[in-house]
Image 1 (tube, rainbow, N blue to C red):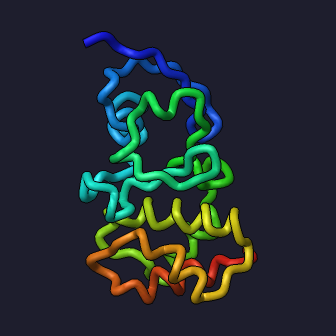
Image 2: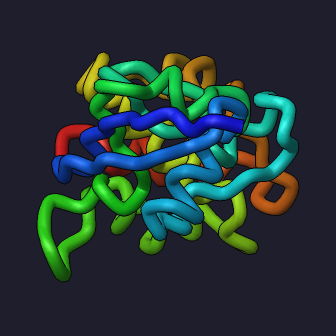
Length: 155
């Protein structure tokens, strides 16, 4: 099968990658670019573990073909922190408030929460709950996830 030459800007860095047309974005990020923070949970786009921000919108990278991301700007969990050795307020809040347990869903939760705060810097608790409905967690019961996001608002 012929490969497609795509260009991506991931976490501020430009990349040129040759991919098969059927290659998923999650696989391109993890295996071609070595960004293993993005997890694949359900492979059906319903759990949110693979959430990334593409051109300002959250997408399920397990449903998005890499060729669909050609020319896109993508932010993964690795690109959330403001700099080397620093954590984003959301990341620190998830640690401080216990917003994670096993960690499989955590990257997608934090990326989705970052997209929310980019869209609405001062959401209410109810708006946080509504926004995060597309990100599932089997461990935490959601209370600590919501508390973690609310604690990061305005930081």
